[in-house]
Image (cartoon, rainbow, N blue to C red):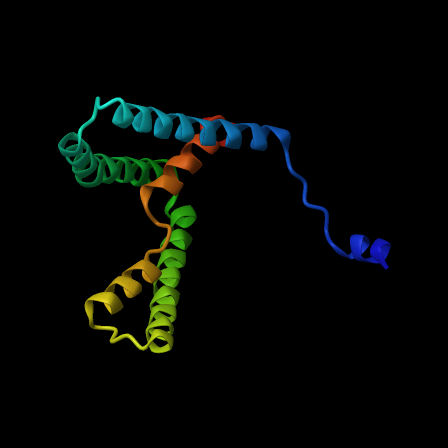
Length: 148
C-alpha cells in the first residue's frame, strides 16, 4: 500500500541551489535580527532610539523599498506579464474581505468596531508587508532569468 501511495504522489524536485539561496537569505535576516538584539542588550540602542528607528523603517524605508521594487518590476516587464498579478492581488483582497466577515461572525465581533476593522485589514492584506518581497528579492537575486 505504501508503494502505491508513493507512486500516486508526484515527485517534487528541490534544487539544491534554491535551498542554498533560501538559506543564505534567511541567514542574512537572522544576522540582522541578532545584531539588533545585541545592540539593545548592550544598551547601544535605547527605547527612544528603537522607537525612532522603528518609525523611520515603517514610514520611510519600507515604502521606499516597495516603491522601488514595484517600479523596477513595472519597467522591466511587459504589461501582459504584470496585469495578472494586479488581478490576483485584487482577488486576494476580496477573498480576505469575505474571510474577515466570516471571522467576525464566528468571533461575534462587529465588523465596524476597532477589533473588527483590525481583523478585516489583517485578513485583506495578510502577509503583504515588505518582508516577503525582500526575502523573494534575495532568493531570486542570482536567477539567470532575472539577470538577463
